[in-house]
Image (tube, rainbow, N blue to C red):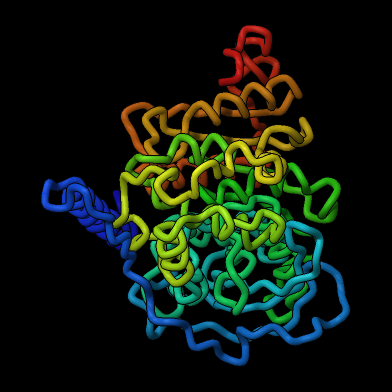
Length: 436
């Protein structure tokens, strides 16, 4: 049975889908034939940053994961609330950008005091959670939505909280703070997720174990950060070795994702991803590639939540670019896309991984999942790969993440992981389909 948070999440997603279909039909109507579509996103009011949200300048000395500041979080103004007895903390911590610069990132940390994990309070597991796409508007940051509005992510975090696990949920680079969010840049989000676990351990007031068990868990954009973070973990954060990693619906190949999405239902997410890459890598010079229509559409993304970006579907990326300009053939963009792909640096075979993806995913190509599976299988990763029939992207998260949560819990409780391939990959890698 679905709980109240999940029902509200489904209702919100259904409303977004309805708006999207209607707006798509209007965009294709004869009345607009020969005219330039408005591409008007429903932008949010510009965030009024509190003193907490503005990183100090210069940043304090310290290591990634060190706490810059923290404050208690409350739920009295929120439509969705975590399980009763959950104590919340908003934290700002040191992390690393995609290009290796020191940055400050915010996150929410929830500790379910009313629930005792099977491992005991002294060994309370920490879940490094990867949020789904929030958009680029700073009011859309998970920590803000969780505390002051409606957080659909809470339905996906609740299964962990009710098992007594602490959940730390990063806002990612630039979201909720004055800089631009690096949407879709998995290196940056991977750093932010790993460092959020370090920060949760470093917050003395939370009382979490310094060397306790850790798991990484996320979907869609969050799965992208989880997957890339898992691959970078041995070198970047050897102190954050996960017991289990579960993620799904992930854009494993940014170039393939962009090419796949052009002209389709979720095409406007390309605006957000291009703005995110441009924020992370200034040499990409996105604005030099955009025509007048592209400049207008791109500017609209910076203050929009993901739901409002959906109301501009079925757009071809080429309509926003100057003649002869295309990031998908530009060497600078190709280089950065490859750095943010998942599968090129498979995790250690001793880290059990659960990955799930809907075969009919209309937002993220399933072929990217099979390519990653092939790469992981060849490396001997202990992988359980779940292809989900008769599902699409939006519904798969709330339906399948509770299943992933149970898989993670089994690993944290010491139950052995068995990949559904033999020895960790079946059929053997030689018979897997070629990369597409």
